[in-house]
Image 1: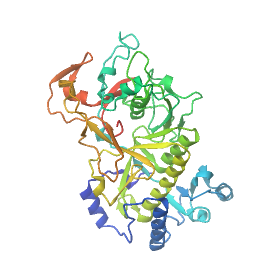
Image 2: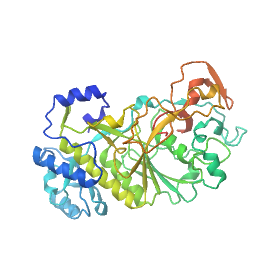
Image 3: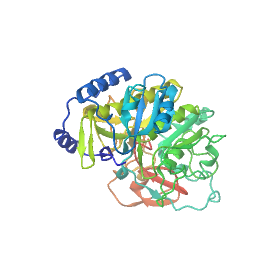
Image 4: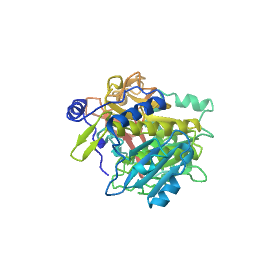
Length: 427
């Protein structure tokens, strides 16, 4: 299903669209608890009527959410001949494919159509392949570690020297597909293997474009220190690859929330979510149809409940803040998910400018040009890279000659190799 939420519009364009749409009520930007969100969701449901609960001619996926256990859904779906796609009764979460979502109103107090959207902005992902010899015969131990300037501002080597390397920590990476056989990542998967695919595409990355966002993120977290390639910030941690987005970056809210619950179910200490969706909090219309304020509010309530459950289960959720250069203190008309949820760590991006021209320069703390920011929304910043260096002259670092601006990006694993990229995903 295509969704109008998939378009990451400029603020002015969003305002124009919203002005043309009916919006009887709008949820506020500040929800500090799920009760706040549900109270507004319920008010919107009363104001707008049963939008989203009317019967349809074709089956559609709906997210069901309940504060507390969600019981009775399985039997109801079986009686009706509906498809119960997922059911996590303890988390108060289910996904059902039905023509009549109203039939489930006695089980769940939030029922909202599942939405497919773009969770990362492709224009902010810039990758350059490193032309390297086949590992491990490159002649140097972890030969590309010298390209990883991001370890300096986070003081990774000092942490390693103190014995803090991620041992006994499990990090779930919720993303698109992965190069499961990459030599820097293959030793890092948990034993037994706990990865999962919620997209139907298969867990492995399958596009001809060999960059692979999920692989790059996983390597940044925990690429092995194994005498070739790169080194992750936590090289002794174990990884759980969870595919919640298609390889091109789109995915549904139901799949993302299912991945979050899987991270908790397998006992991950951290769930890394280098993904984000931005859409209006009020009614929204385009050529593909309309979504109500109630439905937008319902998506946030459902995701907040999942985040609460995951956090209470002992899994810390870490999210990218987004690559739209928004001041999130001044975007009351937008929902920002998952970064705008309570119970999550939201990360903005920093970068040097011209690091390769002066590798001794330790100014790594400038806000990246694309990074979202704002005191109300950002928990911490981290190295994400940038393309702000103005020149095109060549520099050489660790034996690789490239335009100088390339080295300001983040270097990590990719599908079948190693790549540079930039974004709050990397941060």
